[in-house]
Image (spheres, one colour):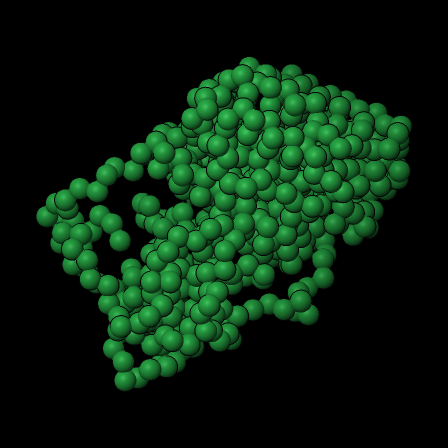
Length: 572
């Protein structure tokens, strides 16, 4: 595993990607932020772009983690007094730090952005004098030499100010948050694009899946633009070789979300981004369990939109920051709509972040309970920024919430006699095992019987993992796990058959050692294998995880392997 001492320092990679167009890629090999979309811990790039026609435009300056090294790299390419435009695909407090530094060095520059971004920007730049040009669908920026930027508003609940831009001269579509992934490396374009498939799917599931309806609208708008040679996103490599395939997958994944039978209305406001991060983690857990999430940003949503989402949902969750000891006005308005619209049969949830107190969370909890709503989980209270452990807990809460909805709505059919095919499938046996995994401070374990050797060289095996399992998020390519094979007559398998609460330590009371890869080895096991996830494949309601065994040992050579015998293939 990579240790802190092995992680490369942050740096900037610059190169020409099209005529008069330079990519300035700020890179971090370590985890940059605690948002759920960074959880795979493969580093990230924050991509910015410089177009030099007769006039000069910078597109999407990075966040404050890269401010200084970005400005140093930019200055090597152009004098600050030559910058005419700074194009912002979206604005947030993190990016505002770099914007303020740019404004100080290039006060003549005009910031081009959407109207919601312009409103947000004025509260983030500390009274600096700045020219702001609002770019609507029909507005363009003529940079000369044939470069004339066209703009496409693509708002989503998490980024209501989002704006993509297109240069007809180079046919480059600058896609802001769309079509990205969080990986870091020297590769600029996506040659061998399937290598990034898992990373792109994870990125979509974290950021786009809760906004499926808006994503579909955005895709339609982007596809109405003139043809693009490649996508230039905020994060990850440029999308060229896999552009058509990735676009089709975005459509497919969005439609899969929209066709789910049950939905949860996720209503939130996020002053500094922390509440939005918690919302994303809960939404990730809900969507993993096969329930659609309809995200509503109360700061920009129309009251009718809130009402419609609540009316058609099977449950709702409200999240709020605490500002000056209160919930923001928009959240109080949304709460009023919920109280007058929602059915008492709908499952509810409350979460929020705060700095010094959490009165907004208390308000939401008390109002909903007084109105007779049942809360599906204890209110989540996050002080300052969430940690990895907090985000994993939030994801597990979301999964439990979705499963509770399914039980309430009886979505899963009652058990019925297996047909002959299912009876035959049930005769397939597997070694009864416990899979343990760990990544940073987050760990998990699960009982598994769908296990099989897959390869001789390298020695490899597969494990089928249900999509709604908590451990699933730790079993992506590059992750580590231990397969603990159990002996016949073992005493601990029953421990792992019980239902665990979100955040509960699944190994409490179990004697363990620690493997070289950091995962738990069960002392009462028959044997164990230390594995690295090489690949995984989506298979219906499971992920099939392929791992390469790098070390192992037999702890009880006199014992036989426990085998799980079933009579039906339609349940465990």
